[in-house]
Image 1 (cartoon, rainbow, N blue to C red):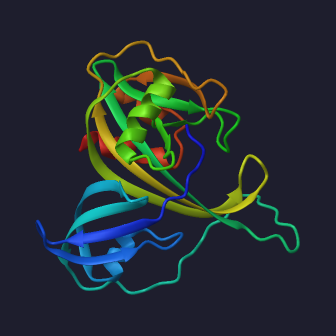
Image 2: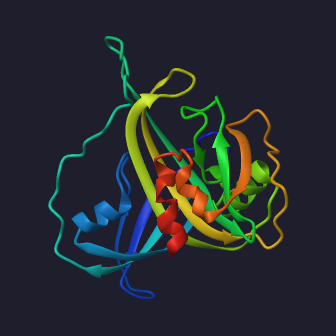
Amino acid sequence: MSAPHSVPITVVAATGPGREVDRFALEHGADPVRELARRGWAVLRVESADVVEAVMQLRYAVAAATPAPASPRSVPTDPGLVVAEGERPEPYQRTAAYGVVTSMRGVLLTELSDRTAAPGRWTLPGGGLDPGESPLAALHREVWEESGQRVDAPQLIEVTTSHWVGRAPSGRLEDFHAVRVVYAAWCPEPTDPVVHDVGGSTESVRWVARDEVQGLPLTGFATSLPRWLST
């Protein structure tokens, strides 16, 4: 899993091929679907996520809708967070790619190590984009680094975001904005998974039977996995 890398994000909305109807820069902490709803666009699907001239472009197919009412953003904090007097969180964005990777052996999941804020929890293989790297390239690289597996024909299924204030494992107080590009991918030749990125954020990796997924302690982000597997 790569170190976090901040990438400027532009959201593009279209009602058909070549029919762009809106374009805007995504602010720190904002969610593209909620921002589109506020602007009067209902999202039909996310069509692409590409890096163009060092800017991430998220393209959505949309339909006109009644604008959603604006509401103040509520930014949660980590449970038990203690902030010293005068301490201010640093804005920090992490743009990453993850895979709902399946094969004849099950679903590929990774266990987080004690170098993360959620050791022992399970999540999707993936991680932060390297400078200039596309989400699709990051997916292939991260799946290999964390499991030794190769995947075919990944399909973009969702872009999710989270925004909270908490401490990094280093102790730094962060105003954290996570942007996660999620793909579905098939592994045609599954092998016994091996963590190549030893000493990083991945403690272990394994194939999990579909009916066992919900019995694992999943990260908050990965709790959407049953829904993704059903689509």
